[in-house]
Length: 263
Image (tube, rainbow, N blue to C red; front, side, top):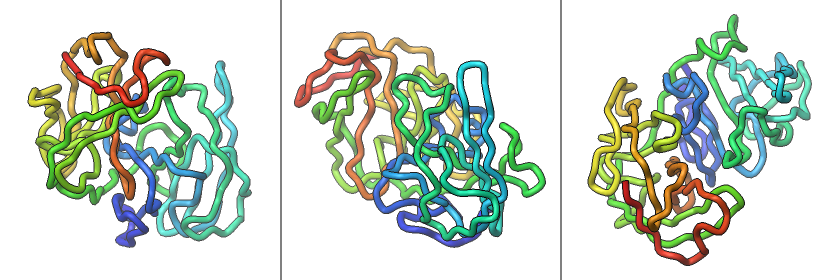
């Protein structure tokens, strides 16, 4: 398992998390996310999440594009995806050192933002899609209730909706902190509680990882201001105001518009 050190934010045991970022354990269709064995970190630039030495950089070709893999070995082996490396095998790194620039995986959806995918791996098995070690989180318990507020920005494939929270919150919280793509990825996560949104359950707990749970979403049609949308993205936030991503074509919502979700 990862060590006990905490980086700024301290949200994932043994993994340096920037003071200002968002992250997700469950908001992805990639297999490792269903088993709490990967975390996606959305930050300003890719960095090494641990102290160690680069032992591998690899380019993997797929029919529809190229993926890049970096493996850093310190007390543990860490696999990093979606980063075009500026480091080479043999380079020594400290946690926080830059390692390259973001690279769009051929398996990204149009609404996927640049991020780095991080797994802690057995040293003898650093590359497979499965077989990573279960991560341990330090997501704080929610001490607030959140409500959707207004659209704060719009992009080509999504809009971001701010939250009104009664206190400090790591993300959307009602009966637990939500993390996942609902309902489009079919499953997601809930920390410290149940998967409840706007007072209604949105899925069934299938597996538990301590105070985190894997939730199988109910198959629902989701509308925002009366218009059907692909879904909503829930994330964990460190050092920044939380929001919800609404996956919808550009022009569906306008900045400053109030949002009502029905399902």
